Length: 245
Image 1 (cartoon, helix red, strand yellow):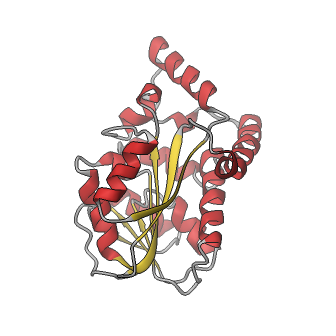
Image 2 (cartoon, helix red, strand yellow):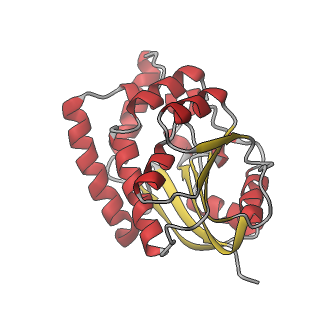
């Protein structure tokens, strides 16, 4: 990801509608999975700390982060969000079975070999452990944020599930989310492309009133996506488990 993109995210992740509502969705999944606060948790691809913020607020003291960017690690440290190790999701610097919960939200689309990345997530998961994986959906939504984030691909749900299966994990649940804003986001990305608008990040397209409105729309979205199972969305969430045997 571009350093300037990290800088924008570092400034907004605590209150931006996207991060606020996605944290709520992840918190709901963690609660349903009944992960104990004493669990060993790894956040792969911490970026500037949005998931570490969530884990801290949920009371997970034994949390670790990993990111390849020195800038991202510095921002996490400055915010006091926990220990972050420099490393690569395709070669995690941790032992087999070290963690009971692994978060990998919007990370595997950054690497050439996504099966290897998820295989590494499986390796560091303890038997019976849970992985929460999210990715961007639908190639037709490719836009500025994919470019500045150095994405390799966007997924359909079946494609993500194939990666998870090939990596040796069992998918317990998967669904599209951010479906309510699918059409507006598609239209905005087309406008940015056609008009040649230059931004460091799409997260800059925001203000107080808009953030208030979009936060409430997206919170309604993540509260209903798991129930309604829409056939489309800007993103995909999957909950996977490493078998006990």
